[in-house]
Length: 324
Image 1 (cartoon, rainbow, N blue to C red):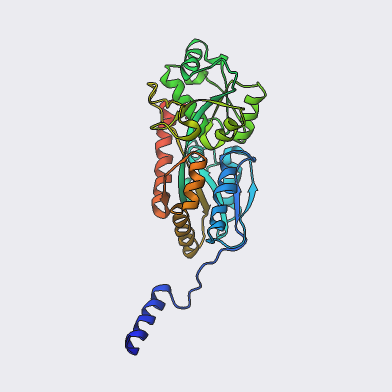
Image 2 (cartoon, rainbow, N blue to C red):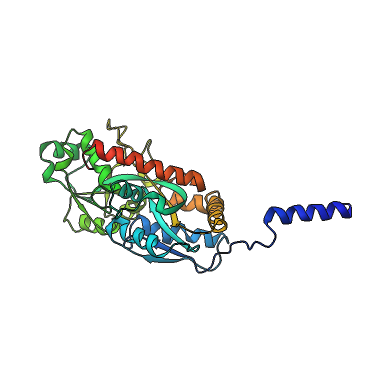
């Protein structure tokens, strides 16, 4: 290459990357799981985020901090009020996050108060019972609801009006049951709710595939239905969907991350592109398939638009079923 051309090429590269502008490098990265250990948000921090380290995309390690309370509201308020501009803080998020915002449960905060970074998969909803439950099929549960909805106790890891609650209300609504009569008890995480099923203190668990699969493998849960468009593979291959049983309910729970407002553009773009690279890796595909997480991707501005629109859609849904 001619010397002049080499110089011009080098200058173009330097201009393209911003001479004198320090590129963002993460350090001491922390991931907040807005719930107790054992639920989907905990899974997001402890299983999903470390793939970034495994792939060499983030140096060191990513520390998980559990911050339960208010169906994610305690963590959301903490991040908005105390962590503005923290380029090294990730927060596990999901449809449960946007549904709580939609229900007005986050102390007046809105979707605009944080930066939505990425959604990396969809964790479909499940309805499960103890292995010895008298509910052998979804239809058994529907019949019990139609007969006496107050006789069935349902537990989940989101607050009243949260996504776990909404999923089971949508099913009850399909059975022509007054959703106000459905007995639902909230716990701070899916793992805590599952304990109630194992201990015989509740009848039905509403949650997600990633929460339920380890308990199915351990013999503690039996899944009646998966709220997906089509049947899933692996341990769920023989489990029907609500759609195929004649109930038009699909409940995908996306899993991903938000970050504090006020982070630098360089940091935001770093995390967006880093998660994009992670989502395309074989390592992520393996983890996703092992945990029953469907492929679902949104990044950067697309993710922000998606989260904001989902809040609006869920607000409409809550109004329709009388929960708002």
